[in-house]
Image 1: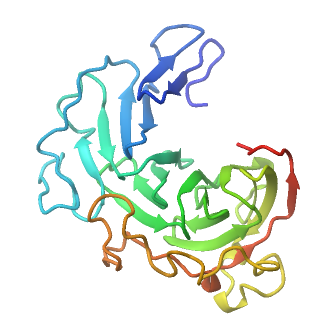
Image 2: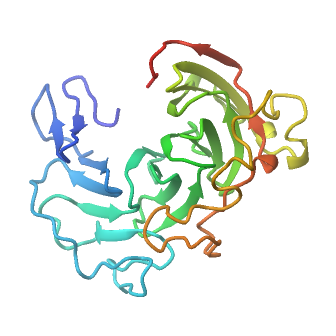
Amino acid sequence: MVTKGASHIDVIMGFSTGEIIWWEPISQRYTRSENLFLAAHMDGSLVVYDKEKDDGQFVPEEEEQSVNGSESGDGQNGVKPGTKMHINKSVHSQNQKTNPVAAWKISNQRINALAFSPNSRHLAVVSEDGTLRLIDYLREDRLLDLFFSYYGGLTCVCWTPDGKYVLTGGQDDLISIWSAADSALVARCQGHQSWVSSLAFDLWRCDERTYRFGSVGEDGRLCLWDFNVGMLHRPKNSARQGGSVSGPSGASPRSEAASPLGNWMRSNSGLDGEYDGEDDGDGVSHAVEPRSRIPILPPVLTTVIDTHPAM
């Protein structure tokens, strides 16, 4: 959508071998300025490439240290403590003759999905370790928020068209709605009976207060959901009363007692030493919210579209 035109279109493909291929099937010419793209890898790395540059042997730069360690630089390549990212190569590096342009290590487990905010400034990344990271993409050394799933990995992510909220689907069969401005989980959506695999907004049914989105999962279901600002900010003690915000219908497959996490964040998420079981008070990491404190939204429509997993 960024580079398409009447005479050209860019296609980027990633392979299980770790290779990435840029293919321009029409013009075969490098004439456009939108030349950077981002790739996510199974080792928890994010790598920025320039399609107009040749590939070169990549060696992590020695001056760029782990942000969780005691060392940090003072120059442009320095990494600020508390950001929970390893900058293996900075966009400010002097060595920009070959790819990659930048390389960041954000997790020890695979990255399942990523999405840019509508203004392209922020990046939402979800991982198999059950984390959602909101990153200031224009300031690579700044992690804005680190959220955790109820349990299990997070599988998909997308932004509302206005960039105010981030939605994630996961292996907990839930869709979570996060407020980017408030740095908080504001609702969970319960309707799938297996992992949620994909999310998308209906742009014709979204305005400044009301949003419509769809989801599919490995249960073969398609669900449609509506939420608005009033639902998400209603008092927590009324989250299970009437309206479109309600508690789980029938016996809930997910309960506080059954959750392997309970009210605790994972101790094995992300990078080594990233979290030790308690809130580190850095203002970036956010504890898992119990079900009783977060509104539960039911779908406005749910239907089985196939016996096979829907993607």
